[in-house]
Image (cartoon, rainbow, N blue to C red; front, side, top):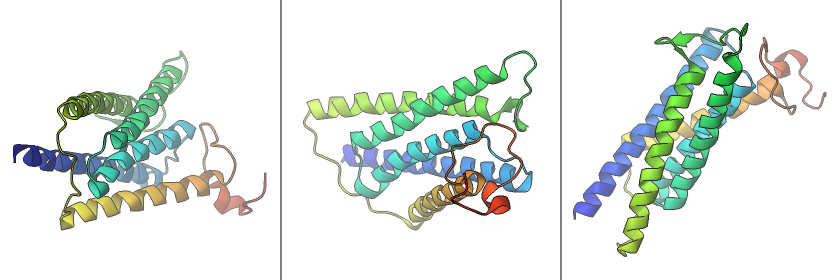
Length: 196
């Protein structure tokens, strides 16, 4: 009975993390669409890492808790942490100016490094927890029942993933991500998707 209660609380925590990722992606869209700060190549890649992190947790919500889902989320967190750290190293060079607005004194790449690093620690803890559970031969998790709020958060996450993919396509087309200083959506100005 207590194991089922713990899994329900874990699912609620993971749903809160997905909601937090939705908030971050919505905030990124606010800076992009309202303040006109288009994401650079690093920013687009960091968004992809948030989407990977949330995808593993979303799979846990839909199909039940599985250690492989934590591996997917941990992979997204690890790559995101490394990208954020690389971004911070690029911006620490003398003469380089920070990109984007600061939030509580830190720029988004510093915040993402902190968040991704905390997520890595969480997923390492979950890996240890599930290794202990497997050694104890506990029963596998069951498929969760979903509330209306859970469906709303999961639907919002899927919608934001699709919106980010459309945004990245409008910004870059089929070409690679373009490094810093992009001022417009290439596909809206040039319009030819096959144009090099």
